[in-house]
Structure formats: C-alpha cells, structure tokens
Image (cartoon, rainbow, N blue to C red; front, side, top):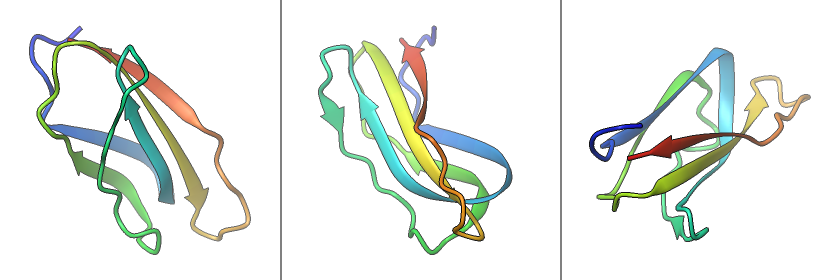
Length: 82
C-alpha cells in the first residue's frame, strides 16, 4: 500500500521488449488513459507518466512483444493500493 498516488509507472524487463498494450483500471473497472511509447521502440525499461489519481485500488495490465517479433507476451498485471 502506498501513502500517496505515484506520479509514474515503471516497468522493467530482463531483455528488450516492445510494450504493445497497457491499461490502468480502478476498483470499479474505470480505465485511466495512458500514453504508450512507440511500438517500434524496444527497451528493457519503460517509464509512463500517470495523471493525478484518486485514492483507490488500481490494477495495471500490460502485454509485451519480444524484440524479434516472433514471440508475444501474455497479459500480466499488478495491483496497487493507496
């Protein structure tokens, strides 16, 4: 549990990937719009700025594609409370 809303979302991976899908939903399943980096950009770390968020439980889901484009990732997620 966080004491205040985060200002950014940071994702780290062991190898270069393309972030192809990202969503942030509150407890009521309302989605917050996020700006994704270019799908052409492969990286091991992504930092996505977050808008001001109300106190709630949020779920982050993402999908990545390997740099060689032959493997697609599964949707993974994490929960954040504040």
